[in-house]
Image (cartoon, rainbow, N blue to C red; front, top):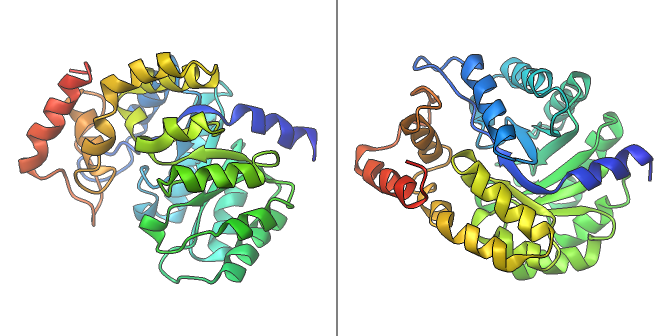
Length: 301
């Protein structure tokens, strides 16, 4: 494996935020707030930033906006932390185009969600990822989140994909620690295994996971960074104490579909404007108190 791929593997660890995409009330991307949000995340110790993942409303940005936001991330971050670009799609050619745009922009890694809705078989998943990896010379991360995509990347398929040099990591958002542990045993010497489930991420780290791509880190970046930094050191007692203060957010920030609660929380914190795109809508009023109280319990407000 090339030195470039080995290097990015060492950097894909710790607390990685799947950042929201700030928007104006009319739904246009708010680049000023995005710049401030990026700076705040880095100041708070976040190890990697994910641009235009699911939490970044990838499904409602146009392809041009998608690529523009990724390019803005890279330009504003200026190498301070790795930028992971969400470039997945259920159309392989579209995923290749988005991934090529991310590579051209200078992103450090592409995050490719399993093709959603059309329910490809395992051979289709393998060929989809193989085609993207062959077409675009950028480190790539598989993203398995069957709760959203209704398709599950089987361990056998992941093991086959390990043989492709620039597929360097997997974001496992199944929420199953036992399954994640088996995945680590099978591919952990060849591929970085990360959690995509806040509630079980620390437990996955205890069995060999390298970090967490997080929704909660949007609103509690320092606590999440300190938690997973301690985990990387093997100090799970310290990690647990920090984590206990914010772990209720893993539940409360999914009281409605993500990123609706996270955007509401960031708005309450004065960090972003009240903007979200249809078919997502602003957090229902009956849930406001839950998020308000969750922020107070987490010592955020």
